[in-house]
Length: 70
Image (cartoon, rainbow, N blue to C red; front, top):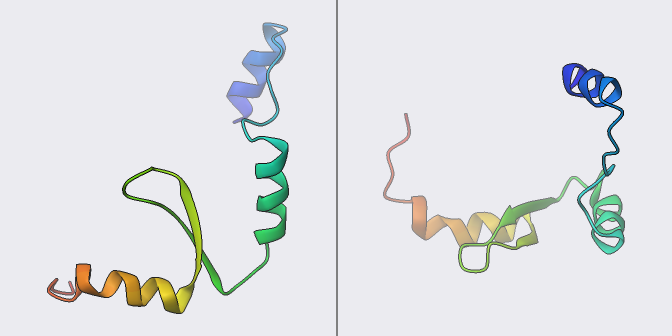
């Protein structure tokens, strides 16, 4: 990051501080610090979803129950 920042400053470039919308930034701030949630990317739409850890485990169980632990 320091190399990228130095290059940007050297080139006098203007760079957006974030690629998130204000609504997305607000949602992220609300989620920060919460211990009981999981944020993941959905399979079909590629969007992000938020769920409790327990519900996430239940939803993933059919996909991993036949896998061997290493």
